[in-house]
Length: 440
Ligand code: BGC
Image (cartoon, rainbow, N blue to C red; front, side, top):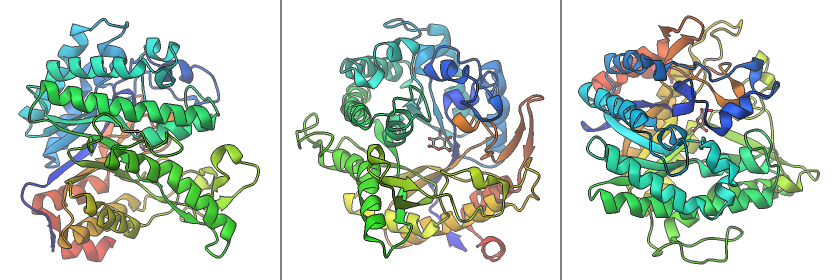
C-alpha cells in the first residue's frame, strides 16, 4: 500500500466556461461562432449545463466518490458583465455552488480567471492593456468580499503560459494574435496582475491561501543527440516554463518579459504552488518557426496507430517527469497542490475498445507523487482533470477527460472505470497493491 496523509485533498478540477453552458458574454462564445474553429463544430452552449442547475448532480457524484475538495472557477463575464457593474444574481448562483460544496464535505478551491474574459475586457485589448491590472484587482476584491466566508483557497489566473502560447503566440484560441511580442506583453501584464490580485485577496482575507496555476510543459528533445533539437527545447522550456516560475519565485521580471525589475514588493506572491501537469512533449528545431522560438512539438508516440494520431499537442506519458519536477519544486519550501492532472479516455465513443487508459494514468501519476512525498516533498492535494466530460476548448467534446462520460444531448452521465479506481484510492487514502498490480 502506498499511503497518503489523512488530511490530503482529493478532488477533481473544472472551469466555468467548460461546464456551465449559456456563457454568451465572453470571447470564447464569439470565437466558437466561426465554423472550423472548434472540432466537429461543437459549442459550449450547453456543456454540462451547470448554469441550468446540474452542478448539484455533479457535486453529488463527486461526493459519492469520496472527494473532499473541488476546484472550480467563477466566470468574470457573469459577475461583471458590464465594466464596473457587479451582477448580484450571478454572485448568488456561485454562492449556492460554494455552499453546495461545503454541504457535501468538499473544500472549494476557486480560480478567478480560467482562460475566459468579459467581452468589454477584450474589446479594450485584454491583457495587452496595462489598465487590465486595475480591472483584475477590482474584480478580485469583489469576488473575495462576496465569497470569502465560503472559500479561502484561491487561484488568481489559470496557466498564463498556455494562454500566452495558444491565444497570442499561435492562433489556436481567441483572440488568435499569432505574435510572440504580443504574447510576451500579455504574460508580463498577467504576472503583474497576479501580484495585484494576490495583495488584494490578502487585504480582504487574512487567512487566504493564494497561488497561480502553472501548467509545467515538460519538453524533451526529439533527438537528444541533435544540438539544434536541444537548443529548441531549451528555448521552448525557458519561454513556456522557466521564465514564469522565475518571475513568481524571485519577485523579479526576467528577460524577455522585462529587465529584472521588481514585481510589487519583490516578495514571492505565492502561498503554495499550484501545478498542472499532463504530458511530456518532444521538440524539434524548425527554422521556419522563429515566432515559436524555433521549437516545433512532435506528435505523441503513445497514440501511434489510433485515430488520435492527428492530435499533435498531447505529448507522451511520463509520470517520472512529474516526480522529477516535484523534487525540484521542493526547494522553494511551499506546500504543493497538483491542481490539474489527467488524461482522456482513448476508447469511449471513438470506435476504439475502451482500455481504461485513464486508470493506469491515475495510478502511475499518483505513485510518482507518493514517491516524492516519501522523500519529503510536501504535496498536499490532487485534482483530477476532470469530473464529467466537458467542453475541451478547441477540441469541443471530442476529448473526454471525465471521471464520468457525458452525453451532451441527453445530459446523461455514465461512470467510467477510472472513477472507481480513484474512489478506491480515496477511500483507503492510498494505492493498494492490487491496484498497483493491475495498473502500474
Ligand atoms: C486547462 C484546462 C483544459 C485541460 C485539458 C489545461 O490546459 O487548464 O482548461 O481543459 O488543460 O486540455
